[in-house]
Length: 391
Image (cartoon, one colour):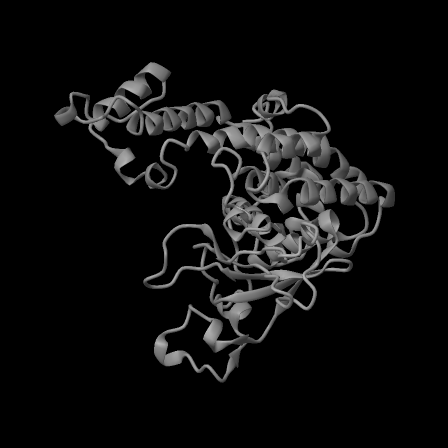
């Protein structure tokens, strides 16, 4: 709880989050931080769609029911000076046979021309001159469209998930490296979650919630500042337990891939025994006889690097609290996506956003992570912001 104060029935959070509100928030984020226009392409060639059955695909036709029907949606990104930046597909809702989690996929990496065009610079003519614009996809399984409602209502946690994956997508979208295998999220494992955590923070910011992201689907009324503040504060509820659990997961991951094998046949303990022991040593509750770690997919994909998920949060928290969060309130004004108040704050927010883009996102995995964070912060990174968010 938050000091015993409840949000109250009059400020219930039910119905304030929808897919369209979220996409609108993504547009505002791109505009205000980077000066980038995120434009939806209503007609998607059938040959580009993977949400249709084979017998539904006509390579000579286009379809435009993605937003209304919960299917695939396509967005192009453009900057007034940089020109076209790439394409992002949103595949947000479940369907039979679909990948069952939430993830960002790079269909094609962005890279610069062989003549050494400046990183982040425009690739003239799109894919001409041997340059390459990125194509990325966000694949999620959010709540399906509600029949008869006209909107797809989401939980706040679903919005956080969407913005987290959008952060990965922007990392790939805005990266420009000479080698595509260093583009975007093809970066150090203990850095790669930094942009995603940073963008996710917008979904919890009280100013961004009340001004842009949270509007009731039935009335269009924005969430009150009080309710938005309580929702933001609720992120700290049980945050210490969550972090301690993440530490256990990270230690277990390193134990599995460490020098001492978790295998009785090799003279070590079983993975189940190691899992239980680490929980008990850390004081994190565990249900006897359960084997949750057998469905922990990150143990395969991270391979001794899962600690990076938590480690990257310290960097994201530092950038968020030092560079971006203080400017959101001062840049807020007007009415939601078309608001224009706080011009001084808005200019500074664009300046800091551009610093995140040009100082961090553009380099992908081609530069040392600590050098990038240091350039964005203007100082050595620290952990104080991370712990402040837990209080």
